[in-house]
Image 1: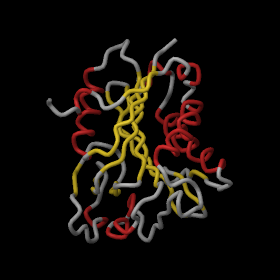
Image 2: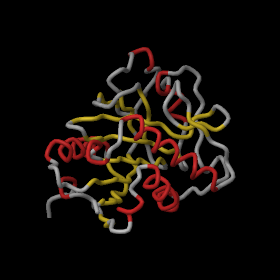
Image 3: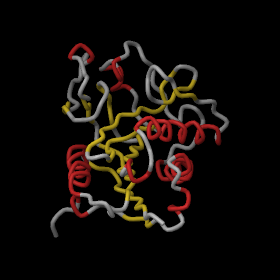
Image 4: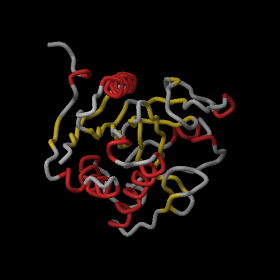
Amino acid sequence: MRAIVIRELGRQVYEPVWHAMQSFTDTRGESTPDEIWFTEHESIFTLGLNTAPEHLLNTGDIPVIQIDRGGQVTYHGPGQLMIYPLIDLRRAGLGIRDLVTALEQSVVDLAAEYGIVAVSRADAPGVYVDGVKLASVGLRIRRGASFHGMALNVDANLEPFSRINPCGFEDLELTDLARLGADSELGIVRDKLLPHLLHHLRMDQEFSSASLSGVPTSLQSPA
């Protein structure tokens, strides 16, 4: 039985987490357990590899960083649950489309628990409620393993999304679970989402032996 490590990182500055994901992916071996990291970030705009300059409208005082995931520009900030699946896709027997679908469908299933009808879209990765975006997906695959992941708006300040064309779409509206009448606490949402995500990743059996861990060593401050 493969092992899986679930990590709760708390609120983190974006860039160190990004570099920790890169390091984990570059140094993992054939027997390294897969990990899923849950976190939220201080406010930041991240530019995917395909971001066009015209999608940055008025970023103001929020930092902007160029990163190595696919996709366009998006915003991350407090009240948004970040889900980072660090998975050896070849070992897990998953393709990239399988991973995207697993992430999206886990949010669709979570929303259904609250009586909310959410859907994914073939033309624009993510999860939507009545055409309004609830969750965004952006991934990078390196050495057959995934990093980056999904941003789920739980109870966030959505104003910064008006400063960009989110994911490259003009006039795209964003929402969050709190505005839809669901839970507004990240910990509750994380615990409800995780079983759905593991189910769609076909890791239900691994969850029985999963270990719940905190911040990885690469992110810990020196004593």
